Length: 270
Image (cartoon, rainbow, N blue to C red; front, top):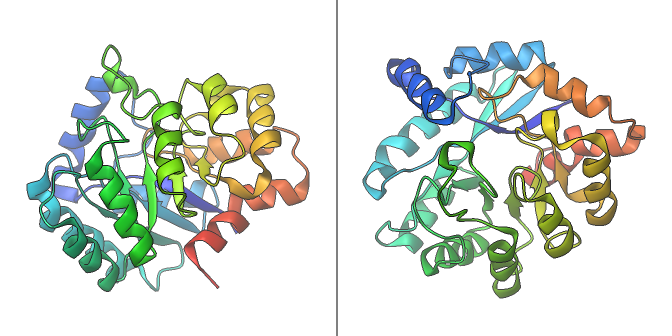
């Protein structure tokens, strides 16, 4: 079994336009079309059994719309052969965060996605701290973009290893995931400040440029039990990312943990 812990999809009616806008902003091509059908095709090509969809709220007012679509994904794909499992989204400027987090849990979601750059908020801001505290109360996974977002070059990095470490120190929640190997393009800081802490890293979008030596250096210090495979589809090719990870000469047990076992345990899947 392979679990891709980091993917994105959009409603069919807006997928093409959304992908075009984001591709232009980041100056990168999409590797899938951003639809549910497109993600399923990419999963099949990469022999992925389960993909986690991570919606982002770019403004607080989109809570109902975005999470309504996410719930529809979960309801529709619950029994499918290749399963898409969607998290919910929340914004640090949302009103009544405790009530919204309770709603997320009661509607069957296993986690939430945050994106400090898209949400224009530093990760150690009080709004995010409240979200993480409420996630702990509701037993929800929290995954956040971390490090440089290539669509926001020239802007302050809103989730640096230093800010993430500050949050972990204040709220040492065991279900926090820092995407992009702890902080994209800031891997020396990840090694110094985050490796060994009570936090997961995923591999979304970094495998094609991080290099085997850097990856193994972080893996050795952080531990094989807290690394999750993620592709960042549609921005990366799932199959190529699976093959890239397999090319890193990891032992079979470590590879299996990263591709499946760690995510399975975190998601609470049988």
